[in-house]
Length: 298
Ligand SMILES: [Fe+2]
Ligand SMILES: [Fe+2]
Image (cartoon, rainbow, N blue to C red):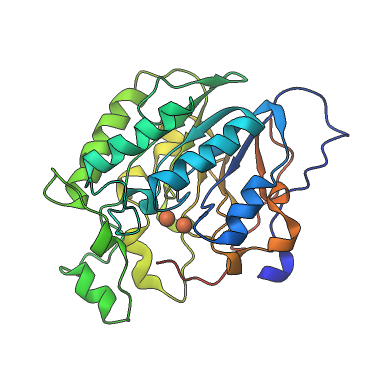
């Protein structure tokens, strides 16, 4: 559906003045074209930016990106994607795994004053912004599948996470996900009023349109968050990971997939400014499904 790119015009001159909350994700700055595009982003000195994961694979890439984004926006909020969480040979700076890897990412964010899921939730225009790190737990696999990795391999799907994303000290990624979900739900139970829920992965299975690689779906979220948009009074849910930008509505709640993706997943010549999605105050937004690149993500 690349002929009908889901982008948002950055010309907001006809709109009332005031700070705006924008979102983007999956910058994947390991690609030179993406890195150059991040550096070319325009400054929006009064506005805030949500950056929901898959900035890159190394701590150095993360710091470089935070350096640019915090220069362009008044405040930056980040949540980790699977790529940052990898213990990858490309990152010669750190071989930390699992929780220790996540802690190193949070430390990098704090060097730049970037807010993470470990910080108090900020408030923007009366909405509590909730950066979350939840992970996935394979619960979106069919119930009869007992070996989800083998089941995916039957279709030639070998997610890189299974080589590079470790869960130490948790016994496996599903256990880590369960711990994160319990901890985040407990924090959310203390929040009053409307929220913006921010996660690398979609909160609902029905937002995942991977028709050509359906056996990748278990690496995309958890059945435990299916009702969180209602339960925690979300105005908007923001996510990435699928590299298929979309706007969906469920129960009156707006879901925004804001992933840029690899260079083949977006129109590089347009620049990244037109890929910033306004979350708040939010224009009148119609549903738009599944724009973006090929359904291929590992
Ligand atoms: Fe990604
Ligand atoms: Fe991802």
